[in-house]
Length: 396
Image (cartoon, rainbow, N blue to C red; front, top):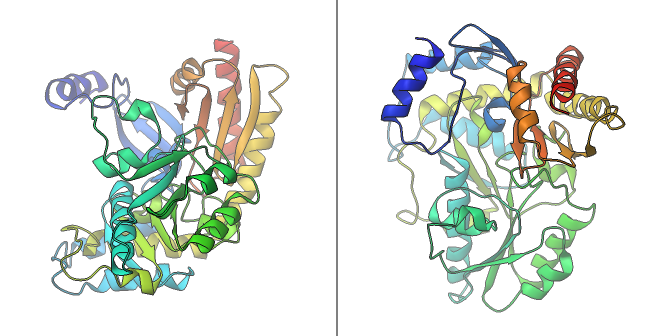
């Protein structure tokens, strides 16, 4: 089928929740994609941080093929070997103790919200149900996680929002401290606000939140849906801040391209989830956990967290060299989560990049966001920057 034919069929039969689109990709290999008409693109969006190893990494493909030939699904009423192996792999490389598996980042955050409330109840504080979240955050699209997302534009049409969430400015410890009251049970924050514009916290911010939680007996929940799996230069983003959360959520690149989410927690907190309190039918099924095990092992074997730092710094430097010629305010981010902040509307630039063969995205109207695979090379960065510069010349 051609792109036009795919678009016509999708327009008629698929609900329009993603807006107008002009591309239909049918094949991927490494950091490259090909559309239905045969045009090649360099993918620096990575399926919105999902394809951490690029497209169709041979290790992940082999793991999926092998597992698909043995067992696709059994319910969580039974033990699942690759699920147990994945849990051990995640815990052995973290400072937390146990995992809950689900299918997405929103589900992982939903589980964390429920766990925080249940833990407070189990400690004899059923009134302590409120969670502090940050302005410009993004935690998902379920009713609980969209309420946790402190951006009004995501709430419109779905009011009333759920009770139990308090919003404060990101990177503002004083405001966070002032928001704590007898009803507070947790603070939920992203390691970097990716959807909110690639907002990087101050050096002492996450540590300050840890101190507030410790002082008031609150849980620190770190949303690492986009930042875990090496993207910031450490396997978990929290490791780059030197702070251990009580609860951590992850998804996106965990499965190497297949849908899986996970929530990790300290044992004494995880104990509040008992049979009947939470579940996910497809969570941690054999296929996705086998893929995730291989994806993680590949990141370790190929030292991709270190590559994320090297290539991320190189990407930021090369883009910053364009500041004198184009309306660029700054390049911010960490590792291979980078944001090019423009002083003008960046949406036309993102569209022109796609026209010229570079896939990225505009967020918060003024920020071009880059989420390339962790295994990109200098040549890939040079190619991306060349396309970006060509697109800027054409737009500005």
